[in-house]
Length: 289
Image (cartoon, rainbow, N blue to C red):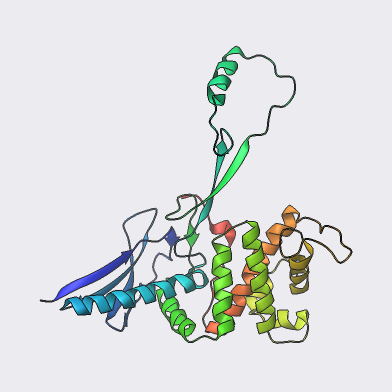
């Protein structure tokens, strides 16, 4: 008896062009297609289907689905601008240090009712940063095109890519999963070091000119500045200078430029290696739905 085995994915808040055509393609026994969902918050859907006649066929399809899903997740940031299942930061004000209990909320509520003047600032509240997986509700990603066609092409190229390219994507995907953290900064620096090796040229200016034009036009700083910051700021690769002093910390503007440009450079090298147009997301397009 023939049955339809399906796997359905409703990823984060991806929004495609309104009149663009959804793509459908056969990959081995699987029919892979994207579609528009009725949800206003999560309108993009992705599905795999296969016709199976036996338990053995179903098990074989399951293995192929896992492999294809893993490849699509790896290349998705480059064709859609953001990971298939993005992580984000949640900021929560701690009522007490981790592992402790407190009656502070009760005391504060009582003191607020008395409205007594306060002689100076109170204690600084603890901030806890958490990574959460799953669907995001605080932003949206506007895609330049429906991404499945390019994603499948990139997945095929990724499976036959050289070791350097696969390692570069690995560093980048891990960095994207740790937004704004020191481990994320360090992984971006490792990716940049590898990208520097992969770009043609004997100096940073020549390497920068080898990047795709849309990447060069979007850089905030030079490639030489980017490599220098990766080695000369305490939060990224090294802690101590050659003079045995602590390195200076990243300023807010330096951190923003480093994250922006490191992401761009790696995307540009991936585009060159996988032979696909890589989506460069304007962060201003990520809005609250």
